[in-house]
Picture 1 (cartoon, rainbow, N blue to C red):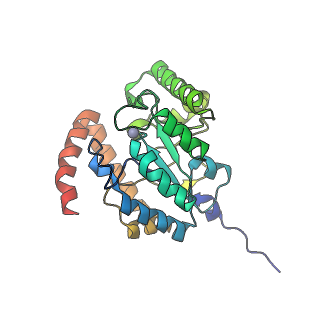
Picture 2: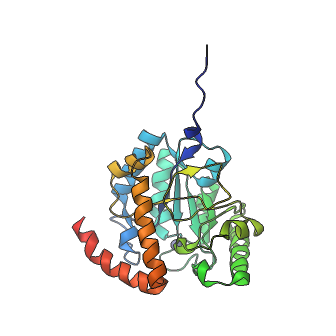
Picture 3: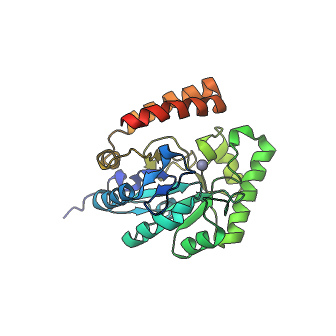
Length: 266
Ligand SMILES: [Zn+2]
């Protein structure tokens, strides 16, 4: 009898990038509403991942044993990651990475070190989002290396486990960031460019699908099946062009104005 050859898709998956979660008991008014996912919607998305992708795990654990499971990541270390997201992950036996800024941990609206330690002790992965969310593209070579080293060591100090993954704030990165990150002790960089995750391509920044407030389960299931990724990449490319043409600050203002109107219509 001939065994079916495992397809290469066994080591391909998608990584999702979340930010804050909003629940009835914890309005997260300080957070960007465009990227804040309502708790019941988040629950439905987790259930879809279990149903369609066979589960979800942290990038740290996925890289150690790549498979079909989706990868879950959270940026910025919002208090709601601990208060809302983590219990919902734990109830389903799912894992995730939380990319935090050690220079901001414990500030208003953000999880503190005791909360992050509690999550780490339960198997969650706490990783680096840079020191204080300064865009890496605004730092010179030396300041960038300082930021990467300092953030990694501070998190390792407070959490007590290795920090091997880096997600650049705002997804802003120079082309050689994966190389510099390696020199600063990281194994891998996770960007904000949409795409399919490939465990064999870790010398480049790995892609993540950005989850916004409006993401529905059908679109999520499409992504897991590999559909709609090209469209997301095209949209990201257009936004990236606008960023480069306008500069980061002017782009943020324009985006705020456009989203303020556009999202109501969805
Ligand atoms: Zn961020």
